[in-house]
Image 1 (cartoon, helix red, strand yellow):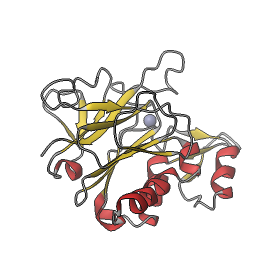
Image 2 (cartoon, helix red, strand yellow; image 1 turned 90 degrees about the vertical axis):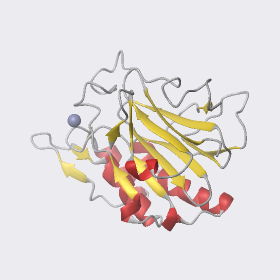
Image 3 (tube, rainbow, N blue to C red; image 1 turned 90 degrees about the horizontal axis):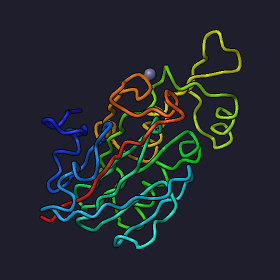
Image 4 (spheres, rainbow, N blue to C red; image 1 turned 180 degrees about the vertical axis):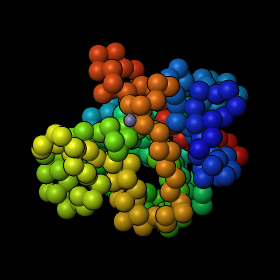
Length: 235
Ligand SMILES: [Zn+2]
């Protein structure tokens, strides 16, 4: 994962290889203007959702007049910059190099338990004919496996969805509490959905430990949100 010269976002080499694709995982202070000249030469139009920790995947053929609700955005159109906002939750950026299809996904534990990453891959398959084996995914900065303490309710939600509990570990000295590897759980889900391991990249930076990112758990009162964005520019 590279920091793009002086810019306030990180890029994934796996996605940076794809011609015409613009993407990034924003740090504090990154705005849409940093994200590839929004409003400037590239003519990108940012699209966001009212994020509600759901399993709703929303397709965009144009920029909507009213903001929709959901937690995954998908498009096959050029110049739409799909964006999710996070502060500890996991941002996933997906692209199909063959079909010029892009997706941005916001995964907290609820979205993960409701298989949002998997549902996004199925949606790409169904709507645009994408092959999961050719999809590429970058999993951005999120709260890390040592810092994400969760209660029994979260384990139960995973169990009820038939998901593996292998991404939980006991929290020493805190009976009834576990820590969850949020990125690991979503990586597992993407592999299950048919993505190749070599087509998945993890940033593995903990938003809770690293001050360059907003963290809801570190700063519940005043945390902002970082933007994570992806879209295809004009050829
Ligand atoms: Zn941490």
